[in-house]
Image (cartoon, rainbow, N blue to C red; front, side, top):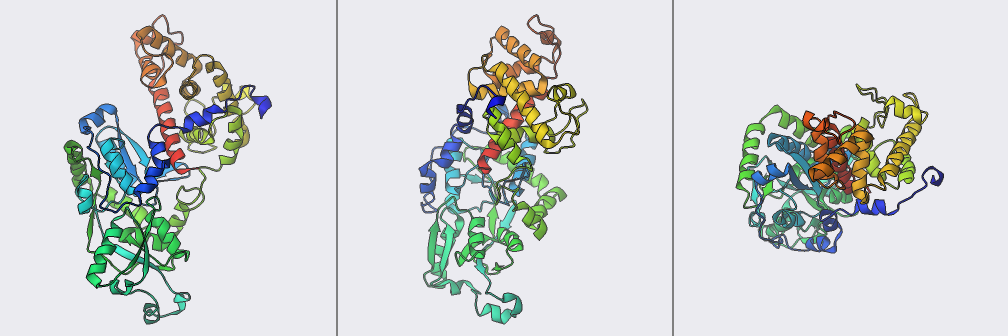
Length: 490
C-alpha cells in the first residue's frame, strides 16, 4: 500500500479516537469503581442548568443508554433498539437531532446526567427510591417484574414438569444459601437484600462490576458459568427465546415502573417527554416497536445476536476487511470509512442516485472513470477507487487545513459537494470573519450560504450555487455514525 500514498500520517487515527469527555469516562478506572458502590450510593453532583429551551437551541438531545438488545445496538451498520427507536421519535417531536452515548454502568449515568454530559437516561430503567433522590422520572411507559434466571436441568426436554421442579428453584424461599450474581448498580441488588428479610434467610449475593450488564449475566447462566441471576421479566423472556435452556418463571418482585430519567431541574424536558408518551404510548407504532424487540422470533433474535451485531459480533458490513485493508492508504480508522459508506449506499453495491452516482461509495461517473471503474466493477475496485480519490483530496487539503481532525471534515465535504464548492465556502468564511480552518460552526455555515444569491454571486465565490445543506448534513451524519461505531465496534 505504501506506493499508493506517499505521505502517511500515523497520528490521524489516534486523533480521531480521542474524543473529549465521553470516551475517557468509559475507559477511566472510576467508572469500574462506581460499579462497586451500593445501589444507594449513587454519585451526586449539583445538576447543571440545562433544560428543553437550551436543548432546542443546541439542536440535539443526548441520551445515555446501554449497548443491549432492548436499548441500543448496531446491526449491519444500522442503529437499532427499543429505546433507540422511541428516543429517535421523541427527538423528532421536539425538533432536534438525537445523540447516543453508551455508558456501561447505570450508576455512572446519573453522575454524567447531572454533570450535563447527557440530557436523559433511557435503558429500561426501573423507578426506585434511591434513583428518585438523584433524578426525576417520566410517566411509566412500561411495567416490569424482577424474575429469577436459572438453568434448566440437563435432559429437561425429556422430563415432565414435576421432575423439572424437583431440580430447580420454584420460589423465593428456595434461594436461601444460593449464590446469585447481579450487577451492583442495578435495582436487583437491593431487591435481593429486601428479599432476605422477607424469606428469613441469607442469599449469597455476588456483586459483579457495573459494566457487566444483565444480558451478559443471562448468557453466563445459559453457558453454565454461573447458576443464578435476576432480570426484568421482559428482558428475561426475550433472552429465553434465544437460550431455551433457561427458566425465567420465578417472580421476585411486584410490578415496577419503567421510565426515562432527567435532571431534577429540567421540568420543561420532563413535561415534553410526558406529553409525548401520553400521546404515543397507546399507539400502534409503539406496540409495533415493543413487539419487534420483546416478542422477537428466535430467528430474528439469532440475527440480532450474530456476527453483524454489536451485541455479540464485531462486524459492520460485508466489506469490513476491504475497508480495513484500503484504509491504510489514508491512515484513517476503517470505521470512519464504514460510516461514510453507510451514508453513501447503506452498504448496497447496486445503489444508484438520481445524479448518476453508483456503487458502495457513490462515485460520480467522471470521477470513477478517472480511476478505471464503472457500475459493474466489483466491490474491491469500487472501494479502492473511492479511497484513492479521498487520498487525492487529502493531498490537496493537507497544506491548507493544519488540524488533522478538521481536515477530515473538509475532505468529506469535498467528496460530497466537490472541491470547488468547499473552497468557495472557505473563501466566504475568510471574507465574513469566520475561522477558515474550522468546519463546524464556521466553513459549514458558509456552505449553507452558498444556496443564497447574495452569497453565491459574491466575488470570492467562483463555482456558483450549491445546495449547501447536503454537504452540511453529510459531514454531520458521518461523524455521528462514526462516533456510534467507535462505541460498539472494536
